[in-house]
Image 1 (tube, rainbow, N blue to C red):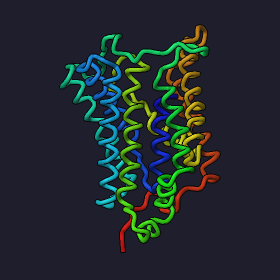
Image 2 (tube, one colour):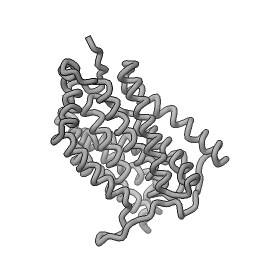
Image 3 (cartoon, one colour):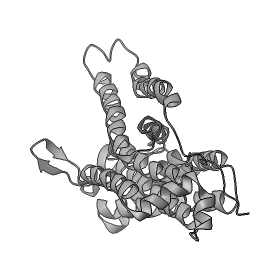
Image 4 (cartoon, rainbow, N blue to C red):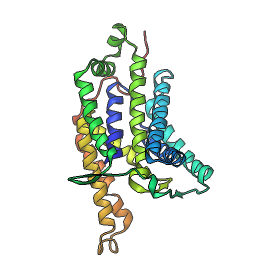
Length: 285
């Protein structure tokens, strides 16, 4: 749930400003790999989370700059990042650790969990909840949030008012990338306990489904991430249940989160309203 929530909240901000980042899958994979390297270099899981967030911010800024200044097709740019990650992550695994598929790091680099009345909870999970609520408050109760929403709806009016459309969009692209990068680094350091080249496993696209389901509202994106996270957890539990794992093929069970994603998106896609200029570059006249 945590990586999905972080990436979805960041993408809500991004799309509110009129940008679309299809490259969340690539940011997840690259940030996870670089995050583990930072964790080993700094001997701390938190160093890895910080490194993943920085890498995600840089990738988000890059995609934002390509879209804002290069006026590139945002969907193609994002898919380009995803395809780049497919080759770059195995290259990093071989270059840094001489293993093409998997790297197991010391257990002490895992982000420690906090004891709560509800059980062991990662501080990153708590941070994701706070970030979602904070993003909702910023969007709907601050001047900055009003400007972000205005950029997505009427960039011409924002430009006439003397505000920089490009800077506002680059801001949301960077913040959205940083949150996705934090979520990517959390995958190995807060969840799996190892790094594999397929670590993102489509979760970047599920995060995009959370955004659609939430209608670009960060608080609702948190609930959507919980829903899809439960589907993912259910699939994992079923896959190891005695009596089931012997009769049901693993890959059939692994499809559950993605089937849920398709069903939910198909049910709500026509009922959601998005900013009028989302996905379209703004050219000052």
